[in-house]
Length: 101
Ligand SMILES: [Zn+2]
Ligand SMILES: [Zn+2]
Ligand SMILES: [Zn+2]
Image 1 (tube, protein in one colour):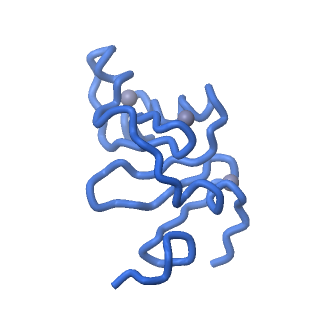
Image 2 (cartoon, helix red, strand yellow; image 1 turned 180 degrees about the vertical axis):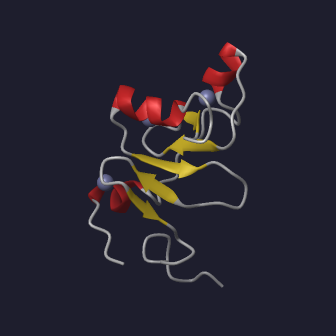
Image 3 (tube, rainbow, N blue to C red; image 1 turned 90 degrees about the horizontal axis):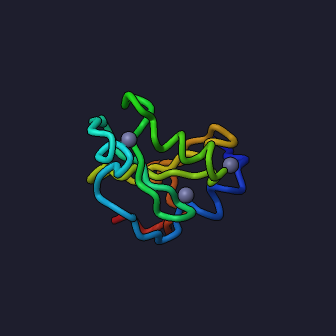
């Protein structure tokens, strides 16, 4: 797979501190979510597209921060909204380092 996405190269391995361990926008409106996504630019945490309010996608539209990463335990894939490209370090160690042992 050739990933033609400069955003993932730049951001996927970035160590960004999450703002929260919940979707603050959902908490504020009393809603629930399915999964959480973390913005790799600023650390915003929002809910996924399976969630009713899709706050992670909303954050992208509001800020144009292109890359989110899964904020679920044990998941480390990233997604670029601009190029609609997924990056999964389980299949390609090039960004996070080759030593996955
Ligand atoms: Zn991209
Ligand atoms: Zn939400
Ligand atoms: Zn952001």
